[in-house]
Length: 288
Ligand SMILES: O=C(O)c1cccc(O)c1O
Ligand SMILES: [Fe+2]
Image (cartoon, rainbow, N blue to C red; front, side, top):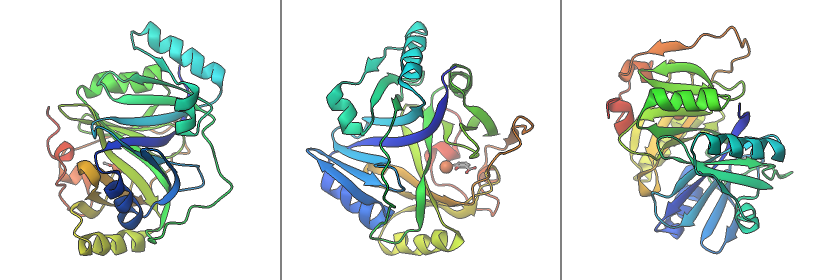
């Protein structure tokens, strides 16, 4: 069993690095933590970085998860190879690009690029954005899946993810005590479906609802409240069409192993307690 501790960063290719940086700082509210040739790194909490935009194909996206020790990483690589995954061991330069000690890269069964890393760099410094979005940290990713049942099995049997709840066939899965660090949404192709940052409270959600609209950013869902995690949320569109989510008040699960996953409708009421309807393809039609 591959024991993942947490989701640690996303890497997103872009054809407009300057535009992506402008959006990440001035709209999303992240802080630039570093610049390298062809890449900009962003902080959203005390970690060295939780998002990287790099010059490249917008379809080139990766999501990274942390494992405990390098022995665990090597065991994970061997286990993935035994299952037929092609595993790339990161070079020194690639590790430096990611602020990690070691990492492996492979594709999940849908074809999403996944990185497993050890010793991602932390900083002693708090994050502070120039725009006060109230962000408290990077929290979860939604990944597209072309077969939710198959991919749920991958994340829960090859890895240690546990299903907290399902919306239709879309599993919301935890790695620690937070309701979900990874969610899978049926879609016809691979990709990161959305990136979530937690914010401090309801005021931050409501303030951002006005702020992003005033800045001609497309709100695609919310404000609302998820029946699943009970978090209040707002979704809006970012560079290259990426969906970003702010949420606050996500449920923590401390009564493991007593928690039983619940089944919600794949319909607006399964996504929002307040009656908001999503305008996000992967939330509107669970068939692929
Ligand atoms: O927080 C949730 O429960 C949730 C539910 C559906 C879709 C999401 O993105 C979520 O974060
Ligand atoms: Fe989410």
